[in-house]
Length: 293
Image 1: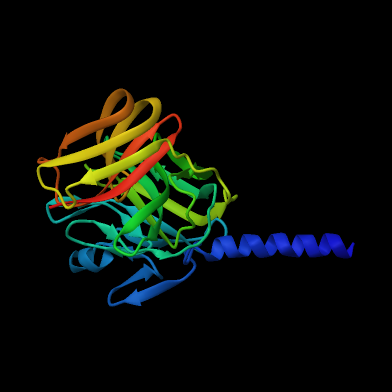
Image 2 (image 1 turned 60 degrees about the vertical axis):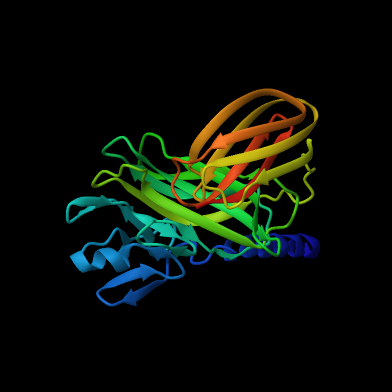
């Protein structure tokens, strides 16, 4: 009996650590900021929309579980629709670019929680989670867990989003971005979330090292981005460019590549900012950070 009790305590301890890694994961704590409230340790657009007495991030009750949950709603402010966005870090209210995050050294298998969501137009909301590691000069992406919402969930439902790992390195930071709408928000689109958590662990995963060399330049870039690759074997390859929220803005089927290969991407039409370049094959994915200026 003592051994069983000890084991149960250990399991409860592990679960507690996992949940504690996500700040205010149940949205039980809210801060008063002038005329409105904001979920503690999360950034939203309330500080901007408050000028119009409109709030895209509000407190819902009761929670699932707990006393409260987060309601993100896209709303008409003046002459445009502002999406409901919450970031577990910082959020630029002009460019809607997320940054920062919270300390996280876990290597979870999944990102989980409860949600309800609805769309009134054609631009679905999303959830994007990025685990990263500072390498001394820039951030390396360790894993991502992204999903674009589909259909609707009119009552509370559990969700599980698996992480895709690009490295065996232990991360140091996690950034979560929650959105009620996509790039073309419609008034009344909403995403309600609660009980966010990590589940499982992939510590000790094998490194999918299918490249002898990968060089991405220039960085920063403004017209063309060059990729020098050296494959260890012949592989069908896809090249993707995504923003910090995980949204794919460019995808190229490069076909079967082997040995040395040079790929050039025209990035002249993309907005300035930070992006991820992904080399995707059946043997794994390699990711590099770039900046377009």
